[in-house]
Image (cartoon, rainbow, N blue to C red; front, side, top):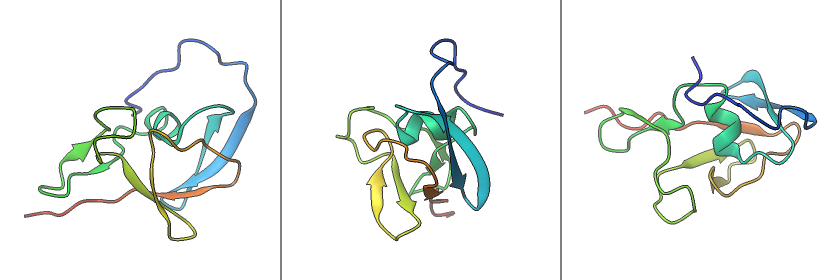
Length: 96
C-alpha cells in the first residue's frame, strides 16, 4: 500500500520506471521520493535496524533517502527528478 496519496496535479504525463525490478510509474516533475512513496509504503530500510524509512528532511540534507540507480550510482531520492525508464533499487538496510 502506498504511503502517499496524490490529491492534485494528476494530469501530468506519466513516466514509467522500474522499482526493485518491478514496473512502477510516477508523474513528470516528481522526485524519486514522491514517485516511490506514491507506489510503495516505504523508501528504504534503516541502516541500523532495517525498519522502514520514508525520508526525513525532504531537502537533501539528512542522508535518509539514499537509493541506488541501475547504473550503480547512489542518489538522494528527495532531490533527484524521476526520469523515464529509470531503474531504482531501494536499500533494505541492515537487520540486527
